[in-house]
Amino acid sequence: MSKYEFQTEVSDLLNLMIHSLYSNREIFLRELISNASDALDKFKYLTLTDDKFKSTTFDPKIIIEIDKDKKLLTVSDNGIGMDEEDLIKNLGTIAKSGTKSFLESLKKEQKEGTELIGQFGVGFYSAFMVAKKIEVITKKASEEKAYIWSSTGKSDFSIKEGERESQGTSIILHLKKDAEEFLEEWRIRSIVEKYSNHIQFPIFLKKDDKEEQINKASALWRLNKSEISDEEYKEFYKTISHDNDDPLLYIHTQAEGTLTYTTLFYIPKNPPYDLYRVDYQSGLKLYVKRVFITDDDKELLPTYLRFVRGIVDVEDIPLNVSREILQQNVILSKVKKASVKKILSELKKLKKKDKEKYLEFYKNFGKVLKEGIMSEFDNRDALLDLILFKTTKSGDDLIDFETYKSRMKEDQKEIYYLIGEDENLLKNSPLLEDYKERDIEVILFSDEVDSIVVPQIGSYKETPLVAINHAKIDSDSEEIKKTEEEYKEIILKMKEQLKDQVKDVKVSPRLKSAPSCLIYDKDDPDFAMMEMLKQMGQTNLPEVKPILEINPNHPIFKKIKESQDFVKLQKITPLILDLAKLNEGMKIEDSVEFTKTISELIEESL
Ligand code: ADP
Picture 1 (tube, rainbow, N blue to C red):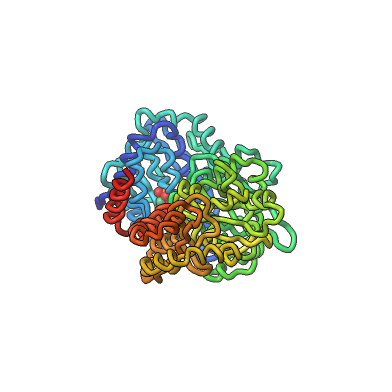
Picture 2 (tube, rainbow, N blue to C red; picture 1 turned 120 degrees about the vertical axis):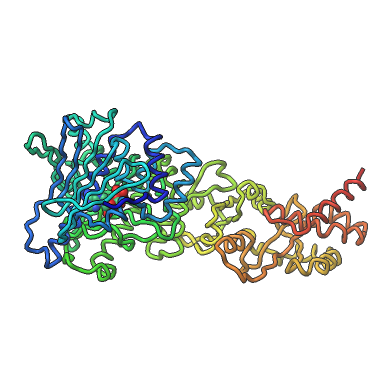
């Protein structure tokens, strides 16, 4: 017999689970059944594709056995089984990346434990909520030896050789005193009916050597829509997703004709823990004619829909295609295309029908959808229709492009927006003054990704999008030219003094009350964009200088023009730039100098 220590994360997890999870212990059974079903899926695949197993008659089943005397509950399957190495890896570590940091954040937040089980599928370990000791007797398909894994869920487990007739796994739970309710037949029946009715394999309850099937064992997604209740859809989601919450939305499509396939997609309520990780797990299971093929095909949907969970079941693909070939499969890419359209249109419907629910969705997944705008051409319009934002007129409401367009002024030809990191600063940006005065609505984008995504939109249904800090307001107008002439000297002096920091100094056609603002040349990235690029780890960024605009109607400049006090102008010029920077949420370079000058000016004014 060999002894092994659990990986630290597993110990942490067991600890967390045993001490903080009491409300919903019954889900352990769902998790064990789900594992058994996966194991059956894998073995079934082998019997259909691997010559070694083609002659095997396979009668897949899951058996739950109650032993009241010994207080044992056993869940067995005749699936793929595990060898010694599998046992050490699968039931001793948490293979999934990101788990450690996730666990740490959980410990900090003291979140409800039930949520966590699902979020990273720690299924098996949940059995320690009800068992003081677990034994796993297992034999891997085509192997000679069977093994017994055993643990009390503290810090270690042991593995020794054992006996088992044929391939498969039995999980034997030595129930805790306070978990003896799970020896009651009715209890097991009701849990199975609730969570596992539509596992596609039969589940039997074994008592006194009699076996009775206790689930429907029909692949839920293959049933007629009219036969499936809302409740059944929801419970099925929990089984395949390990999420304990109801899904936000499900989309069931049964297509027949030139392309025959079934998809059952779920949009979760909560974001999966690995949503923003490069190595996120796919949430989709691919079946061919009801035979499970893989749950690791990230190509089934585009990455910007990576939060979608569910089933893709296709007909006309041979079962034994290799996974690599699968990636280029024409049928799958057609199913993908149709699925994307369907999901996006269902989301649009939701937005129309139930705005509150849509907002819940958007809060969690809006940013991810925006990624699609950069990669997706076919469904660009559909994606744009799903984007929400605040504007200068929306208050706390989120609106969409369609609403914006419907509210455009008669002679307005462009959609105006401003991007920044801080919503509050955005709202008060001096750049908006002119638009407010003209009663023109401006979109305020403040998601981190906006500075990358929004400039790429270009136009919405033929109306161009224009950033107001890049905008070419009619600066060539006669009036501006005249003012520029009047302020020529002031501008020249300021330009000379700030030449290392700004590209140009100009008279502003847009400012009303603020003294100054920063704008950017049409093709220059603005401050928000540069910040985003820096955060993304880009180095060697070009130095981009903004253009400083000054407000000729502001008393500061009026007075300077009158007094011709260029000594004073020299003193306040850096402040004028700093004020514009602060308004945009930028840092000022020399805050010592800034405070010094301000103090002096205050003193002078007293
Ligand atoms: P998950 O199911 O989310 O991967 P678990 O902790 O429940 O996480 O299981 C870990 C792994 O142990 C599974 O991925 C699987 O490889 C293996 N495993 C668990 N139960 C069984 C079983 N009944 N038969 C074969 N392998 C199993």
